[in-house]
Image (cartoon, rainbow over all chains, first blue to last red; front, side):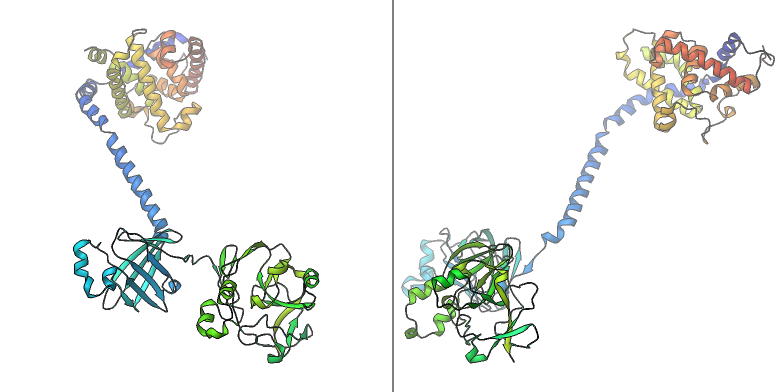
Length: 386
Length: 170
């Protein structure tokens, strides 16, 4: 077999081109398309930015829709805070409006008062006369006493909704911890901080000591001091009997009454203090305890429990001054000082707890000797012997 | 308008070149038109440093290659022949050829695209080595080397198909 020569192949290949030439009709068609449709094509090209923009807008709307869907829950978090507001009091501070509102929530009643001069100065200075001189800012707030109301909170906005005969809604927006602005621009201030999340509560610890069974891990003690008194001679053996102390405990809980060795430093200072003492666990390891105005704060959060504030026979400042006869109050100034006592913040170390007695002015506790090491605790007081 | 003159002069060559590569008259027509639209658009960019035909073929080459690249990126980058493609038309559907031409064309189709290109340009379209190097954007050395290798491979393919000097019709 002879191999093909290059010349022969080249020649054949050259012939091949003839077969691949376009037909006359094809060429005509191509000519038409190129030279006639060219201008049309150019026009089309110039508009390529339209789909780009349309798709971009579409993309933006999809993104924003997704964003709102994802965040929708947070944005509509109107929750009812009616009960939390009990005792909340705000007073108008701005002078741009000629009203002088106070808004006060107390005992499930909403009080809205306007103490503008015309409302107090009687006939000689009527509202109409007053209005001649000064224009009153339009406000939706209607003074009165309302029982049927609700308050919803949406982030920093508190919406008061009053139902019944006089119906209106009013929104207060919190702009600073103690400053609020109403929807009509009136500014209010309060002496109270409204931070519902920043509260520590205790649903477990009972206010009155119940009876407790005795086991092999318990022993009985006698207690004669009124340092734990909450108006019922609580913990006192001569009234209720001996106390049951259990040595069987794993972890200390806040509010737990404990029986412990009095630190020697305290005994040196006051030899009359018994060697064993009773107190209640307030601060747990790692926490910071502070007393401000007679109120205990744990890590800056209010300790909203019966043992979290200064009391006298179980009564707080307000109740005490209502219930106690004038003659029985020795020195009102020093008593007020007791109810508003302060203590600089103390950080509780590991393996220690912060102890307080229930009646602060009648006993010694961590205010005196600082956090108590846990190994000094002999046992927990579970109750009164049956 | 020079572009219309160029169209009359070179459309046939461009079309046949693309048809041989693309193996589909419809695709070849589209690509040829695309080539000439590009030619018209970038007419002012033609600097005259090469022949007009070479410049147009350079555009035809890049247009065809970018079509292959989009259509089948893997085979394009591996420089593989694509005869296994299901949608490829047989030579009868493309052009009417006599037996010998058919054997030649079928053999050519078996080669990898770069060999097909160099044979078509150098031997069929009749470009010089230098012109081919401009069209393919290769060095002249590479054109020469590829051509000789392509021809060797082509001969082998022809012989596989039973074409010998004895069977060749003069």
